[in-house]
Image (cartoon, rainbow, N blue to C red; front, side, top):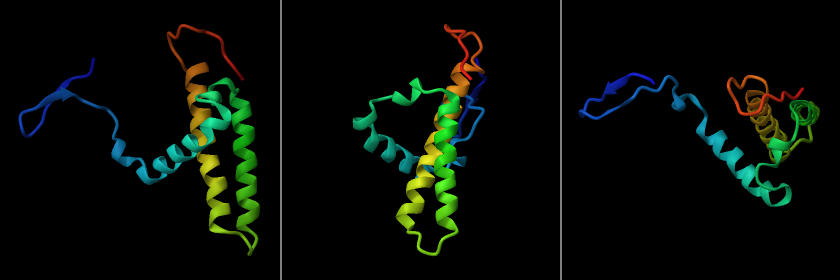
Length: 114
């Protein structure tokens, strides 16, 4: 268990070894909106059923689309955001799948995916 810390007002809590204020909250809100919008079509947590390589493949496709559009003068902000949001979502999904299936120490399942 982590050490206890005492705050200025006298409150105590376990220390947290990471700082969530370092995350770009506006981008995380965009990702939450995307996943909420897509959930009816794909099902909640459907992404957990895909392999790491599936996520990397989809991430790569959206990154390629973004790159192609970035090099064209007729790209739109919405079109660019569409692909960047999906790159970010797939990166988080890939990391979660990796953490669950590859880096997971002491997990109930020892099955590893790609």
